[in-house]
Amino acid sequence: MSGRAGQPALHLAGVVLPEGEHRDLWIRDGRLTFEPVPGAETVSRGGWLVPGLVDAHCHVGIGRGGVPVEDLAGLRAQALTERAAGVLALRDCGSPVDTRALDDEPDLPTIVRAGRHIARARRYIPGLATEIEPDALVEQVRAQARRGDGWVKLVGDWIDRGVGDLAPEWPADVLADAMAAAHEEGARVTAHTFGTDALPDLIGAGIDCIEHGTGLTEELIGQMAGRGTAVVPTLVNVENFPDFAAAGEKKFPNYASTIRRLHASSGAVVRAAFEAGVPVFAGTDAGGGIDHGRIADEVRALHSAGIPAEAALAAASWSARSWLGLPCMEEGAPADVVVYDADPRADLDTLARPRHIVLRGRVV
Image (cartoon, rainbow, N blue to C red; front, side):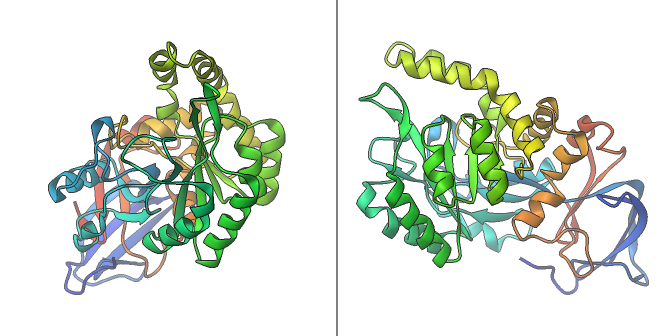
């Protein structure tokens, strides 16, 4: 969604990140320019100007308890909660609801969709995924690639009742064909994984991103770094692992033990991935059990895991925008800017207190 002709011309001045230089920016017809615009209204002087934040893993259309949100008002409320946190672009990692009606509303964040989750039958949260068997995976990947905005979401592992623990959902040969099909359709593929066992085949098949990734090992991290495979750790969701373990312990004690172990090592895994050169991006897994609007918490969690503050911020702003093919603060780009009173690189708590939020050239 681009800026619209006839919007008021605006002027912002401050330290522009990531360059760290004090600059003047003007907004004309919803787009940024570094050329002065006569008569522009100055809406902000001083402060730090950050490219609109990104939640790289959320679910618009999934409400509390995993219940689909079918009404437009409910979908808008989720998107507006993200906007209030400075999140102006969302990577929707699977939703059972068609949210494209939101694209017609210029006051809402950009949504980059991954279609609907693809899972094995009875191997995911009921009602959220398209549930199939492996022989239908390639066809379904093509269908979801055409439904989404350049992404497809697989469920890579889940509880296997016969094993009593996390287990892979897809055979290696089928995964390789599915990745090739998605790439032929112009889409990238990501996958939910908590454990380790599903990861070698997913990474070997050429997957583009791993969600959560708590089961990553040093060897797998090295493979991802070599391939350029990204990870979105969703640490605010990983904090719920002890609750997941307690809920499943009576029926699946091995699963409970696995989940507790993965929780204990989650920070070290994120730090190792970052230090190895794996692209790390900030996503909250909002929708279902996580409230929307928690991107600041996720950035702080990445920093607490050992990622430098500026890199953690980049993972939720300029680096994430580049990864998703979205422009930052450049000539002619849609004017998506968040203004802060203090330098968020020096104090990540600042992210919870935006002074101004500018979406497509409008102060919202």
